[in-house]
Image (cartoon, rainbow, N blue to C red; front, side):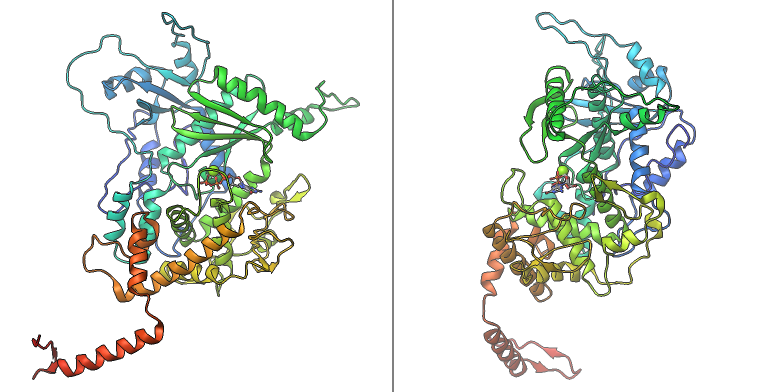
Amino acid sequence: MAACGVGLLVRVPLCAQGRGQVYRPICRLLSCPGTVAADLKREEQSSGNVEAGSADRSHQKRFSEVQKERREQAQRTVLISCPNKISEKKFLKYLSQHGPINNHFFYESYGLHAIVEFCRKESVSSLQDATYTPSTGKEAAIPFRSRFFNVKLKNPSTSEKPPIQCSNQSPPSSRKLLELLCYAESIDDQLNTLLKAFQITEENAKLRHLTCSLIEDIAAAYFPYCTVRPFGSSVNSFGKLGCDLDMFLDLDETGRLHAQKTSGNFLMEFQVKNVPSERIATQKILSVLGECLDHLGPGCVGVQKILNARCPLVRFSHQASGFQCDLSTNNRIALKSSELLYIYGALDSRVRALVFSIRCWARARSLTSSIPGAWITNFSLTMMVIFFLQRRSPPVLPTLDYLKTLAGTEDKCIIEGHNCTFISDLNRIKPSGNTETLELLLKEFFEYFGNFAFNKNSINIRQGREQNKPDSSPLHIQNPFETSLNISKNVNQSQLEKFVELARESAWVLQQEDQDRPSSSYQPWGLALLVLPSASNSMSLAKKKRKVPPRERIKNLLESIRSDNTEDSINTSGKRTISTRA
Ligand code: GTP
Ligand code: MG
């Protein structure tokens, strides 16, 4: 790959360009050759419509390629806290002394920040060499040569400057969403609109990868060959703006690099400190990193060490990016799950639209929560949608076992004894012959899980069919790689019942939609009734209003038709006219 700007990401998330909303990120190009075309291509891709089943399958990058490019891009990028009255033009001119800039954008998080991506990595070192550690009056600074800077104005001028345009990093407000959904033309259009409004933007994705890269710089103080990799919804294509940033410290490269260096009759090993178990090693590493982030990490606040959890982690806020971060170690299986979800999300454009709507629906109905507990997680909901799409006829998505049969030798992957093999080149997977609309799929999703035999069956995307539950947990969703584990073990009976009840209610509301579409475009309808917290009242009202037994409803309908026939008259042209009789 050329040093700069080429094919940053083929499957970039679509930029937020909802109906009537014109949002253009500020990505100005200075003197980096070859980037204009790449940027135009990106714009074209990011403004393309998402239509049911029409995912652009021309050439899609493998998950590992995308991650590699993003990582390399982040290593050439710096984060700068700026004063509000900065002149964008002068600022960029100043920075470009250190080398050409590929692109940049501004955003707000506890003040104005700029993300500046240079064309070359050396420009970052050059900028670092020209930067000093401040000495403040009473406080003392702990020196740290990072890629997170402050820029100050030596001579703040009072002259008017064009306002800095900031890229949006937050999901739309309920009001904005209501507006977007109410003006949509159909339920399919509503699902696609919601996807565009919530999905991680190109800028947000850059910020996520940069944050991991900055944390890697800190961790490298202890582990010089480590990699901090993002996983979960930040990279699996199902992330909503504002979702947490899951990352893990990968120390595998250290082992592998040195294994290759051993040759001849001798086997050289590092002297290491031994501890009783893998778990204790993880806890010790994370404990040290937690201290390091807390004491030395620029912009890292509220560090919590959650070391006794099933998966030990360090949680902290990265103030400058605004992300809530979860740092763990040795999470290669979770990274593989992220790759699998990325493939499912890329195979058919209906998948992401449906998952986003179900996630928003579950959040609005308090079925999911940011606090850990007996709630269904977004990860489990995504698995349920994938399973449902595997069960359609013909299937929208293939089973994991089928993806395994397509795998080549380079795809073979065994992690901690678990077979995580599946095809990584998604261009070799045949598109689905299913042409169902999103509206139908949404309705059928609610119908399907509103009537699913949760008491005896388990959900299993590996085989794409229901199986007998191996234990008595209320909801059983098999972990696709660690197949003896249930990813929804935390869900209790009452949360499951709430899910089933709301699924049935939502299926019912959608069934009524065609009959009752409101005349005023500001009245919630379709998906808006399901995903907006404020619309839940309208949904219950609508339900109450319609809570007439079916037999009664048919009788009323027949009566109204009969009275229509008597009260309306047929005019001479054969058209029905409504009687003016009171
Ligand atoms: P949001 O953060 O809610 O947007 O979704 P997420 O997919 O990132 O979920 P979360 O942050 O809870 O978890 C991050 C990743 O960890 C998931 O994408 C999975 O790969 C993995 N993960 C989460 N929960 C489980 C679980 O119960 N079992 C296993 N094996 N992996 C899990
Ligand atoms: Mg997450």
